[in-house]
Image 1 (tube, rainbow, N blue to C red):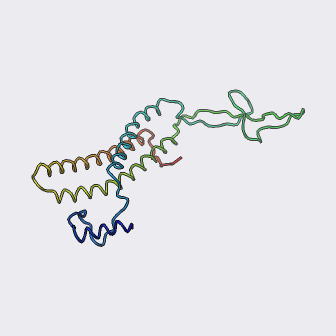
Image 2 (cartoon, helix red, strand yellow; image 1 turned 45 degrees about the horizontal axis):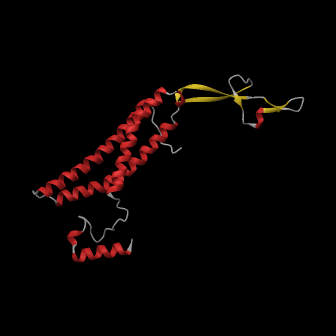
Image 3 (cartoon, helix red, strand yellow; image 1 turned 90 degrees about the vertical axis):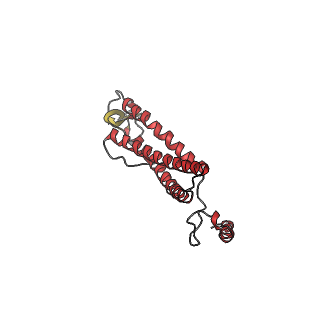
Length: 197
């Protein structure tokens, strides 16, 4: 732990213990990666952005032919085919010319290519993990703050409303991620395993 932070916490414990976060005891370590309000806001905005794109991505998936799988076949005929890149698909003729013996042909398959969806689930998992980390820390902070700020003044009421709004935003982000995942699973009717590539 940073010696400066440790010294600061020790001084606060000695002279102004009421300024410490509720629940901070001598046995607890101060976390240096607490995160900021800006990083939490950026996470919530990125969740909004990605989950907002899901309906458009799903509609493109269902209407675009480019999202369907293709099978690669090696064929001896050049009809609707391209040159092969394998060296074994070429042979010498009697005049010592190198000519293609096999060609590549691409035939569409009736099923969807789920690799982009697996990558999308991977992105949702990354955001889910980050949100769980932020939620755990923030919900504890909100609960502790609500316990200590039970006044009836307008400031206390405003603080209470702000804290409850923060909790609602985190719960809404969680619900958006779950809805996006359910939408993807409903489209393909199989369990999508996350993949980073």
